[in-house]
Length: 156
Length: 288
Image (cartoon, rainbow over all chains, first blue to last red; front, side, top):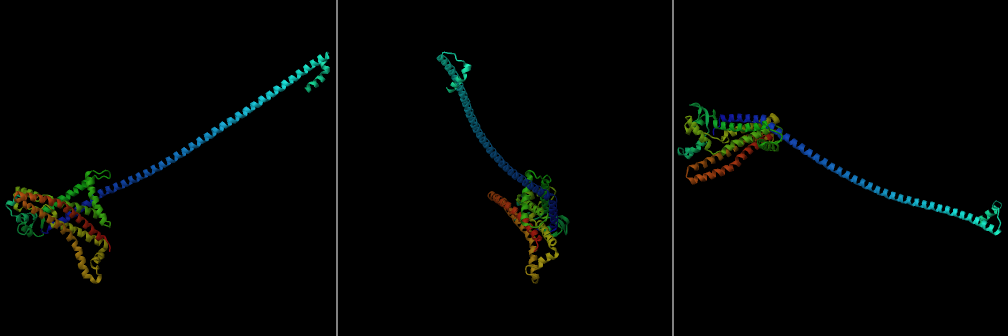
């Protein structure tokens, strides 16, 4: 328990240990700790960034999906409208065609009727002439009396 | 306890509390002291070989291990040894950051050295008291030494030379940084102009001087006292082994209990020494 030279030697040893620790031990270990800390912070930031980007991407995807859906619905709507339009048009056309056909047939019928009437009239005229011939028992000169016969047929 | 047959309890305790001293005896010249009395007669020019040996061995062990880890330290995934070292370094750094407000690259390595070194030196206290001294006694006898004159104290922190050596070094650093940061005038002013102003100068000097000088004294005596007392209790428990089997078993239990409790004490003392060093240096760095 004497205080002696040991004290001085202990001080020297202590100083040497501290110096060695400060020079060779502390800096590399603390440096590695700081580096790892920076790395971890960087990794966390990157993860955060990735997370945000992913969220953004998901939002974008949802928006695109919604747009596509509404566009598809619009296209279907348009197609439906167009289809009814086409059907309507076709119906209209068919109706017009029908009407035209009916009209044409009517015209033909009219023409045919006219012609038949004409024919009938001529036949009646010739019959009338024949009847008149018979009545007069004499041949009538059709060229001389044509005008009369004609006027007669006109009156039928 | 082979020596208990030839030694009294008092002699046994005394033997255990004497350092292996090499020094300049006034009559015999440079030699190992054969007794505590001879060691005292050597005065200042004597060295406690055991204290020096174990403290340097343990300090070297600490630095060797930490240096080995520091050489292949990686910022990536740490291995087992690195993990362990980082745990201690992180702990010390956290304490420095918490208590030390200035900027000084010396403080943290100093704190680390104190903490681990003091802890290792205290740890020697947990080695059974007779194991190393008795082995050394046998070894020395082989070389022709008288076993009763071969002393060995394995716990360097039970030697006030070791604890005062450290605390004086810390004290020198405190004074050095006080003068460096505050200037000679600032440091002297701190000692003389407060707390009573310049008219109370003598009183200030006494108060602040005691305050300043009490730092190294309390720092070293706290560590020394705790470890010396702990060592003493281990020695007293070891005395029980010389009696009958029941007392020996009781002694075994006591030793186990005291050793377990002592794990707390040695860690706490190393921690206190470190924290107080940081705090004292922090005070040296602060302007008033």
